[in-house]
Image 1 (cartoon, rainbow over the protein chains, first blue to last red):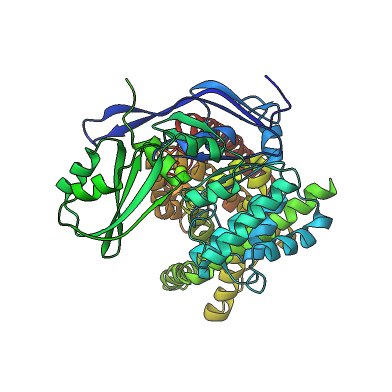
Image 2: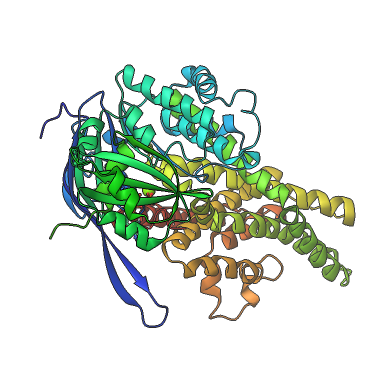
Length: 328
Length: 257
Ligand SMILES: Nc1ncnc2c1ncn2[C@@H]1O[C@H](COP(=O)(O)OP(=O)(O)OP(=O)(O)O)[C@@H](O)[C@H]1O
Ligand SMILES: [Mg+2]
């Protein structure tokens, strides 16, 4: 094990036992994380992407010592997450998405005060630190109000401030931008970026691909508890089998037309995206192939709007990675 | 050391704020003890016997504490869990004991408030002046009652998170407690087989000590037993609490809502 790494996970596994039924209780075991290995260099911003239920939160909870791994080991800043719990907790911060985890009856400021005591923030520094963070997350002027009157995004901002209170070296952000308005989300991205600039290490999960693309140095895509791809955003985009993407706006496209387009030689995949009245076909095709005319022909007499070709985005790569059939 | 005191003091004040705002928002919790005290005194006044009125007056004061503080205490961790803050408390680099001591103190404060409110109520509404031989000893007894009840409630709240059914147990103890703890009728008048149950509750001993102090006797034996019983619950709660956290990390029950 290399203690220069900020986070190191080796073969992490976690299963859950759930019970169903009231009278005849049957045991069911869910393998949420099945042997995940990755590492974060110090000062790196690492993204963990994956569909709902892929095991992102479970992985993070093991790293922040809230869950014991069923198998495998993990270290944070060289400290084992099972044996050196206190040392790990002192050095990490984490933020979950959602509006729970706050004292409703306390003001935003009192919430921060309470947690800074628990996180051992120096009493003399507390006041200044809280003011600084309230300012950073844009809650200035509302910090004396009780949290019960806060909107979802305001709560999320408060969560972020809470996670930063003790100035942790490693931050775990689990969907931190959920519920935050576009301007706030942009500010949040800037904040996360500036944290990395001052040497913090960040592990981020998000469902917003542009956010991951803009922020992350490296990304791992996790699917059903397994990492299916890892690399820089550029690497992942290249994974779209070195192909290109054609976007076709249609009105009322039928499933069999989509199937026909999928059958065109050179086409690797077709995804339909609903955009209001339109359905946009996102057609991935091999780099050399000239498929535009053939695909359009295959759609028959469907009303077609704008047609454009573009480079694949991280979202294309992501969708391909999480929808393609598992080999074997 | 200074930092520890600062931590405990700030956490105490903030927890007290949480508890008291939820208490006063549900005005009922403040009103209930007074209503029950009223009912008890009205019944006892029918006797027209000054001595039994004194008995009920003292009992009603501690009964308010039992009802109000006990109920809040036994659902404490369950509420933290619903709010999603339990996970944060556990994940903080502070030991669980340090998190819980200020909460216990805040709970005791609520209990003391109930006693004072009931005594004032008795005075204004019923013109009942409690005859207390030694006020200092009386105050010591009340403090002990509040502290031991907080520990007892805390024990209930730990078991309530661990075993869901015991939350019901905590709630179910509220009314029998009025009979068990000797607030309105002496424990000795209960059926013999129930009495051990009374002795297992620290509040019973505190009540006995307080009556001694009021009658001019020595409360120390009762209060010592009360402290001992309270400490047993505290130790059990601490042990179960740690087990709870370990098991939650293993079985993933912390965040469960
Ligand atoms: N406490 C628990 N008990 C039982 N099963 C659980 C528990 N927590 C998570 N799981 C299961 O583990 C799997 C992974 O869940 P996890 O929360 O890690 O997903 P996720 O990747 O964070 O998803 P999302 O994007 O929706 O947040 C899911 O199938 C979930 O049902
Ligand atoms: Mg999640």
